[in-house]
Length: 217
Image (cartoon, rainbow, N blue to C red; front, side, top):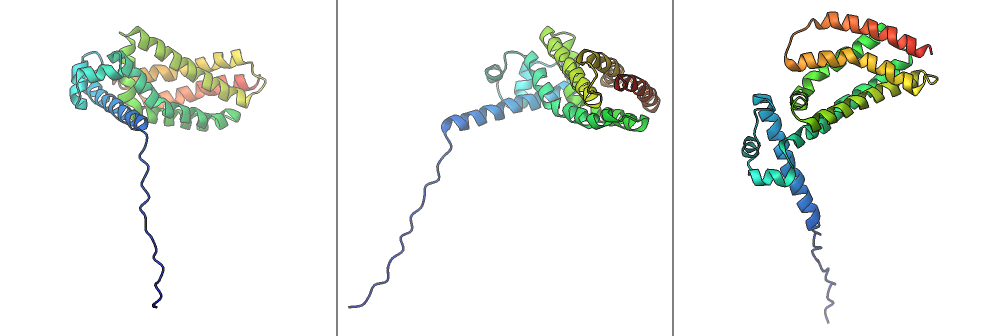
């Protein structure tokens, strides 16, 4: 009797589909991101105040009703823009921490120049936020909190270089250091020209004076 060779059974293992809840969440995030992307485009073209929810919805390929499923009002959008720009600021302050340990005029000026260069990358995100802050109280409050967090990050960098520096003093020094940088950021967002090399020279010199005082504490 002829021997029969054993058969190898092949079975297809079904691929497990992702849970419906996860699919819905991904679709929701995708739609939300489309609204934010559309808003950024139109804010850059028309400004925050003159942009309507209908225009944002149309640019996103959706409806006004769908927009309100994701946002309570147009004033929610600046918060989304702040979230997108947050990484730029955090990375800048991480770079400042080693400089704060042993600051030099050249290293401080180089850091300030890098920050000003970064402004170009976030202009379309930051400009509508600052415009909205002049007419939307809730956006103004959010921007104040963002500025306070930047002061706190810089104060932490100063205290890393001078551990004996009191937290309250570090925040005072940080607020003094950031004031001219914030001023010229607003000048930049308005599109006004300024002599950047000259500003950087003066700002680096003033930063060194303040930082040396802080680090000698």
